[in-house]
Image 1: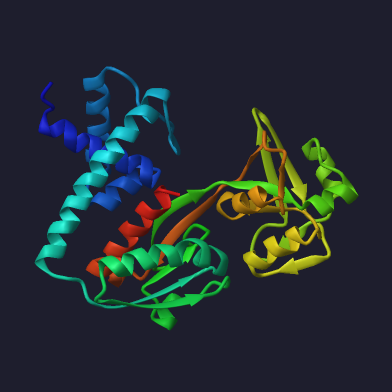
Image 2 (image 1 turned 45 degrees about the vertical axis):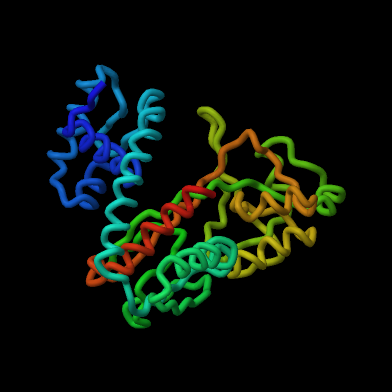
Length: 297
């Protein structure tokens, strides 16, 4: 069956709504008005004769049909973006310096491998990468892109969401031999924690309609995520750890995940940049590449 061109456009708009999280975010990202974005979603639902989104005044969520349909829309949008990118690269090879800052652990485990591949594709782009878990003043330091695990503060900066990282609750076999495995969230207050100074001192867990907020207490604190994980492996307490970091250690047997049937708060990863850099071709290429790289993890 031949697909109308207008429907293809609506599918791309739909995928952007999901990736940006809101109709307004998609409108801003695509340079459209919110009304136009809303029109495409309504027209798509009318054409398909099925509801794709649950909408309230503040939030949107995918229906079961919407989740299935989004996977196909995402592929179409990615292929169109990749085609455009290849044409742009044929016109002119991007050159120049990109200064990047990112947290140490995610930097070494994800960003560096991604940059290795990116640099192979664009060898004329120079990279200056700063690793720190502290929030850097990117305007003052002349940073082109900051990778951050928090939403954009009230500032003159711009941000784009790169990925959402799932987390799990972990401890070491040595620790659990001494203190036992927690069977329910209410037992967690009895345990020791390795504290990460740049995050909340409360752990939020949910299961169905039940939610729990656990105050974290421990005798070890650090401002480095890699050090936090190492202290947990050393048997000094529990911690919430991103799955990309925890999974290989669980497979090696140095960590054990617990309460896996409870949902922990995800980590949203953002690319933050000065507004004047929004039209930089090399920056756009890097951001798009990082989004694609994260999606394959």
